[in-house]
Image 1: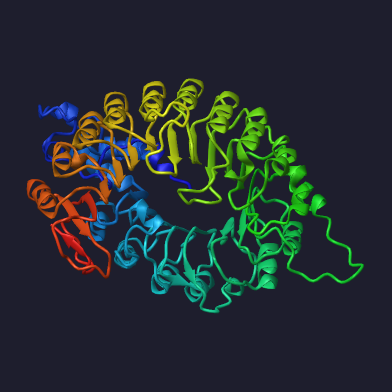
Image 2: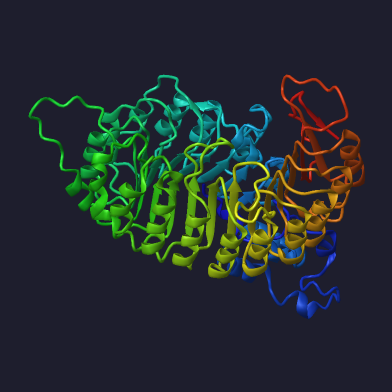
Amino acid sequence: MSEDDDRQQSPPSDLEFVSNKARNCNATGSGSGNPEFQSAYPDQVLENVLHFLTSKRDRNAVSLVCKSWYRVEALTRSELFIGNCYAVSPARATARFARVRALHLKGKPRFADFNMMPSDWGAHFNPWALAMAKAYPWLEKVHLKRMSVTDDDLATLAELFLGFKELVLVCCDGFGTSGLAIFVNKCRQLKVLDLIESESSDDEADWISCFPEGESHLESLIFDCVECHINFEALERLVARSPSLKKLRLNRYVSIGQLYRLMVRAPQLTHLGTGSFSSSEIAGQGDQEPDYVNAFAACKTLVCLSGFREIILDYLPAIYPVCANLTSLNFSYANITAEQLKPIISKCHKLQVFWVLDSICDEGLQAVAATCKELRELRVFPVDAREDSDGPVSEVGLQAISEGCRKLQSILYFCQQMTNAAVITMSKNCPDLVVFRLCIMGRHRADHVTGEPMDDGFGAIVMNCKKLTRLAVSGLLTDKVFDYIGRHGKLVRTLSVAFAGDSDMGLKYVLEGCPQLQKFEIRDSPFGDAALRSGLHHYYNMRFLWMSSCRLTRRGCQEIARAMPRLVVEVIRSADEEEVDDAVEILYMYRSLEGPRTDAPKFVTIS
């Protein structure tokens, strides 16, 4: 789901600290020591100017100008983004930034989402929560991604930050409904509680009913990932007393009948996650069903629609009245066909974001291409992700999208077969692509028409899409594709590789040719120690490198660690696996100002 930080280019460090050169220069950075220039921008004037600077990239650049700007930028930074919780310690972060009101913190690498690393690897929020409580008692917002958050952490946020307003947990785990109950009860100014793709335990605590009585400040409540029953009557009362509520996403235990009652209470919603979109009530004979069509029609400001967890297709026409106004539609849980999609998508002329299952087939994608001329982002997920499954979408659907949706900027496309011609066509028709992720699920699948590797297709993407910053490659690929990426992917910041390449040269092409590369994920590819050594000049500029099931050895990893002391080199094995040979199953390598972490479990060896 959303990875907005990838779209904003910034200097390489997760938490930027000024270089020695900048620390030692005068106020202008010229080194001349001229008093006239040193006093040209007194701190108070500079502070007033920097308050208007919100971009991470711009702020990081300002902090590198000179010692004076470094100091003032830190004093005026109210929002702190840290892309790796182990890149810097909480103590160092709070010592530099004294006036932070919002914290964005990331933990585990992305492959943790696919069960490719042990669940208890780390990324604990607790030390951060305690440090923030001491340094920033006025903290208002915390956004966490892939962090381990306990019930005690939630209690800390609720009890020690009296003005706390916003909590967003994306792909987090470790907490339960009892922790949520304490949190919502004590955060009396809470505006946002978004639980997105996070795992929570069912402690049988009625957390919804623990929101304080009286008018609520809630603007956003998202809990579609919470896998337990809720007190619907308490939820209905909460929605009724939340006049500012704009975003509401329900879990699968909320039926369409209950959804109707909530919509009647909150016609001001702009974002709605429907819950199950099926009926769990046992209606009596002759009972009149609610008028779902009118309920949706009354939501005049609705622009984003998702949910449909356990959909009953007979209810789908109820959403027709809002389709013309939608800019975002998420059907990634709705197993619908092209024929069922067509009456809906034909009304969605303003649609900019569309997520869907491949059950709509190429025919459904052709319908999308015919109507959605404003589409900016498309994600097509597989109903069946097995490598040997039949793929209902192919190059036909991809080419249709490229021809009909010329404003496309981001695509994630799962399929079983593809052609170079279709990918080349997309590169020409959609030159504004920033994100291109093509996942051919079968290993080493060639162009199914010509039998050739998929090198030229991906090569066309990096050559013709000049704004490309994120790329995922798959299929039968040789070192040639990495040569293309190294020569033309000058803005690529995130690269994901699976089952690709011939030799160490492939990795060398990328590491030597992509100066902006920040995040590099590789699995099941023939890259060894020599390939790893080819990136010594660049690793300090990257956020991380992940390699699993490649041809690395412990000795090769240790060589990197000795050569780059500010790089943390973690060798990870399965929790129940013993160290039996020199082969490395998983390498996770990242820069850090603190050195090796102290909370590494036994299955992690840090060089």
